[in-house]
Amino acid sequence: MLLKEKTGRIALLGLFLAINQIMIILAAVLDISSLSFLAVAAMMIGLSILEAGIGLGAAFFVASCLLGLILCPNPLYIVSYAVMGYYVLIKEVLERKFRGKMPMWALWGCKLLGFNLVFIPLLLLFPKVLLEAGESGQMLIVVWALAQAAVVLCDMVYDRVLWFYQQRIRKYKRE
Image 1 (tube, helix red, strand yellow):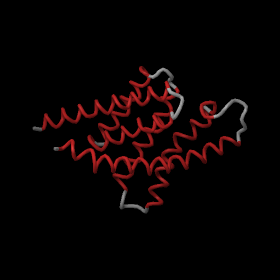
Image 2 (cartoon, one colour):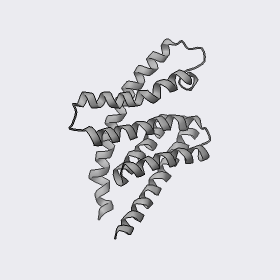
Image 3 (cartoon, helix red, strand yellow):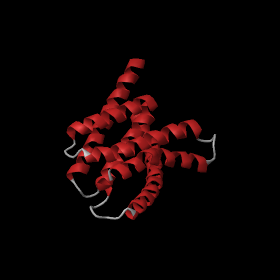
Image 4 (cartoon, helix red, strand yellow):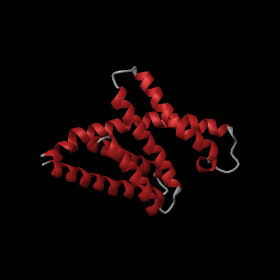
């Protein structure tokens, strides 16, 4: 019985990885809503953590980044995806370990700190990824502030997607 559970879990992660890669490729091919496609791809990391735990979820993230480097026509999208995926991993680890043990504002502070540990170096080292040529350094501050708001909004949407998955989709998988 345990083997069936393991194989079923791995098969489900394989399906999640296929959806993940389709979203990454669509983000690279269709310039419209590319960040939305990448966000959906990053949400697949959260679903894999929900179904298989942090360890296999982290392995899923690494596998999706490596496979994305091979399959994606534009590797710059993998960098954006990796930042989003890293945030999902940080969020899941922090919420599983500290939810209810620390105030909500402290948890949010830790999540934003984790995001900024990756985002600020990306912003400073590769500003051309996010800005047009010739834009001022002050625009970096605007981009940083908008990214903070986007992280909070995406975090809330992500929680809703996980709730929907658990309440509506997961119960049919179990039957």
